[in-house]
Image (cartoon, rainbow, N blue to C red):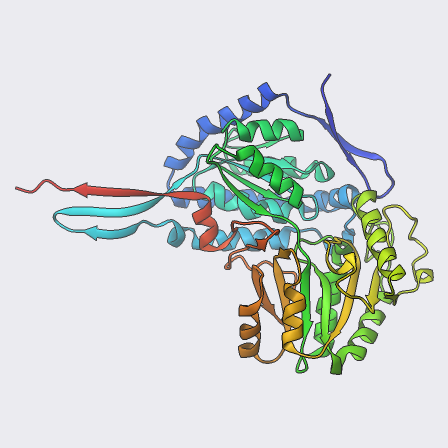
Length: 462
């Protein structure tokens, strides 16, 4: 019997879309056709590959009016925010702009006697396993540079955003990308692992849970397949005594609550210097009290449901445990009667929290944030590093030298000053500890999607 992969809409619990999972034989055939198409693609001039990928992105933008409500149905983000195309275009264009420089040969010698150089060679077929929380933004981080670098791409999307991969491939194929070169596949976990274990890919990029990343590495063990992972996060914000308080509140609380808190680099814990703590909390509470929880298809809704009831249940559990241990909830449930105990979950700010509470240690990935008072940079650094994760941190100060000094002490992939919850395509998107390893975007992103190949050419001289 063919297994069906289903997307259950968080709006009402109905089946929004379903697709049959590929058998192992069909999956292997898809990869084989991608591998066959890759050689000819890699021989095309780089400028041509860049042009076609950019055309695919443009075609995707033309679908935005259809894509935005699909995202709302699939994972609950309100339509008022207009989808992800702005960020998709920024990242794809950023990678296209640096491709020539990033992929050019390193010439060691070009003399009458020798030509010695290092070139970048595509891996072949790249498997991209993309998550549901930002289905297009997360996928484009690898899809665009992988294709530009001369790889074929097989895209497997999360079941929660089942249609996103289809839309991407539809757009890129319409733009002229060969059909076999960029494929969307529907796979169950066992088939995915078997394909990786069977050495079918030159590189695997996975964005998702720590457990999922461990499964990818176990599947690839012994195959020498490169695996890049971006996994969990518990990103901190630190507000110092010279911070622009209003901007810090607006940015950090938005970074904690946007997309119902379901952001890879969302802010999950905030540390505020004691002199600003009370004012920060008061302003933060006022901001959150103004949110409107409801159906994401309603243009007035500012916070939609969480993507799945089990995600909401985990946030409820962390919150209730913290309150039982002495945390103070700052947002009154009466303000959010739409919280139905299911996917619709009210936002919450917790004070009187500490690192004995799971809400300050475990990934929440939902609309709850704990705020702690600190008395010094040293205390803040110790608390920010007290985590198994390391993706980003957000430092709030007018002093860039101070931010850089603190940043060097932090175990994290990216240090932001006076900014949060953003990916800069010119910088490497990477993490440490249980957030995973590898890097996307930037020149380093191209290096991860290619391998070095050396040429030592001794010339014949008379």
